[in-house]
Length: 191
Ligand SMILES: Cc1cc2nc3c(=O)[nH]c(=O)nc-3n(C[C@H](O)[C@H](O)[C@H](O)COP(=O)(O)O)c2cc1C
Image (cartoon, rainbow, N blue to C red):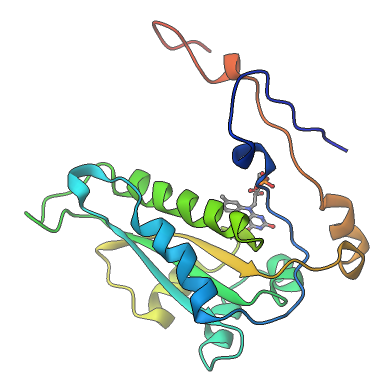
């Protein structure tokens, strides 16, 4: 069992957020879901361009299977208990001049972290996924070529670890991180 330790000052939120897979299968209201998008809305972006777009399906809607069928089998086995599946895409060009944006994915990443942290603060599970069919999602959801498909998120009410498969139960724990000196360099790049 990893015990997350932070040698430097950091808000509890950052070390307590994690990505469980156990979800209860309960629905969430639009009000609950919109809170996460509201958080995403306030993310910073280059030129305040806000290139992120979220496309979602709630489990009790007719759109659910369209999203769910995009997932790889590994993700299907646990994401079946999510209350919503949310796809994050970003617009490659600035809206104000239609020139390429170098930071659109970074901007959308900031929105995704706001989204995830707000979900955590609201007592929901938010679990990012790259295990889905990117090409098919473009086709099925009608996403134009000038948007990059970034990631899918499973959002739901927390469930019981015991209800996961044995294999998933073993993975249902907080993960650790690299040490700061492995990714922060003073002066110049270091290997
Ligand atoms: C963009 C992205 C894609 C991910 N893809 C998957 C996935 O397809 N399946 C999965 O089970 N977890 C996936 N994860 C979860 C990561 O493995 C997890 O966030 C990482 O191990 C760190 O753990 P933590 O979020 O619990 O702190 C993904 C996370 C992110 C941010």
